[in-house]
View 1 (cartoon, rainbow, N blue to C red):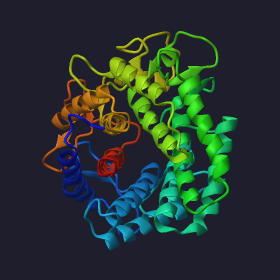
View 2 (view 1 turned 60 degrees about the vertical axis):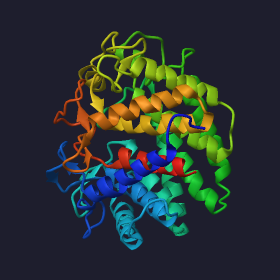
View 3 (view 1 turned 45 degrees about the vertical axis):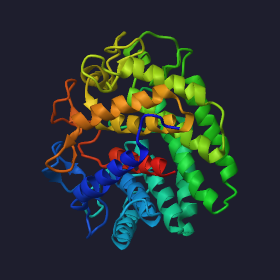
View 4 (view 1 turned 30 degrees about the vertical axis):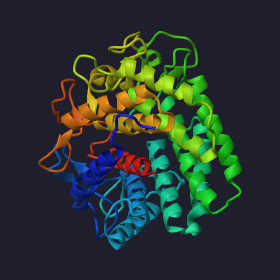
Length: 409
């Protein structure tokens, strides 16, 4: 139940944003010759810098367009079904034909045509390719790709279990258990579960156990008794930047991943802990001076502190902790609205309203109908690289679509 939010008005708002701003902006980025999408735009959004394709973004694109197609077919948004169907098929064929290397892992970067430029340097790429496969199969019913997807899922799962994987652009030292990898695998496993469950595939029993295990890792192993989820859990006790910091955007995203898994597995207990984690994340991660969600914070709040060990990721934490980025804010819009509607918790509703007001006063680029995605602490645009040198439509469009589904339910 939502008390103070006009759901009809909010539904109309997100529908307008999606149909008349974001999908129109990204229409020009579709590669209708080779498939996929161009994402190497500058932060402002008016210059395409390169037509190279990060496979990370291509897998995301397939997931997005499968969802767009689903919303059109369900009458939630208006769009040209045939257009999105064609673009989805071309995007899927691009990742199917160009992502996989001889060793079975996924490439990091290709040129426009799909020729490999950088090989397998990040397990996250494999995860996003799997998300693309799951969404495509679930939307189109092309079950002939299920076995290929499952072979790659098992390979990816085994690599992570063995520790034999990379996480470029930010390598993670071996002695830390990363929240990011576990939350990503929870999401991947849940999305594959959805696709297989639709076709009554017996492998959902195995996926069910893995989903429950990832939830336990996130909410028990990585979560302390004050409801803080540390981003990098050390194998031994230490007082370092790595062991003290957490990433509010990841925590908020992780919480709706768990809620999504709960929904699929019909689990209705455990909401209180999720609410407490979200509230603690806002308490420590919301910038009380300038508003918005900080990129990284210390477990006691403020700038991350502790002993420095000289890792590249550590430098990123310290140099960009107070940056205001697009993706944590779009994740927060969905997570707080989801929890407000699911639980009726008044504080979740208040957090949604506070987030909504900050986001739509800060991020939109009214000239182009997208967001200027990277901001400094005061909310001013900055031209810099975050993770990949791309402007990616994924988080914003994904969360706008999820909010539309939520408000329509």
